[in-house]
Image (cartoon, rainbow, N blue to C red; front, side, top):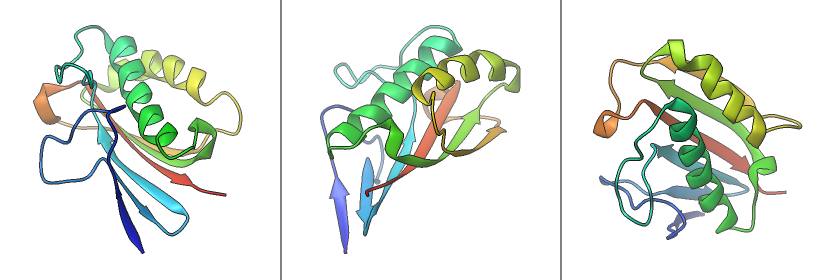
Length: 126
């Protein structure tokens, strides 16, 4: 059974997609870019600030379902500049300090709203 997840703790979708979908014991989170859910505006700042906002948005979706970052099993990270990898990784590590999820990180030419980072995740409900 498929269930659409919508929360005010993360930005509203800017296209025809859901913030997340629950399918069985998995939650598939759509990619998040550094948008402030209160204003709908892209967060200005360096890659550290943008990474933090993206991960806080992911945390908001998870918390709306009674889950936390420890429930994430897979993450895909899209960076506009792989030169930002180390700074992004430092912030990322603070959110996944123990038992980090599987992960891929790739450089891309462009992201929605010209963001520097986008992260999507899959969580498992135990």
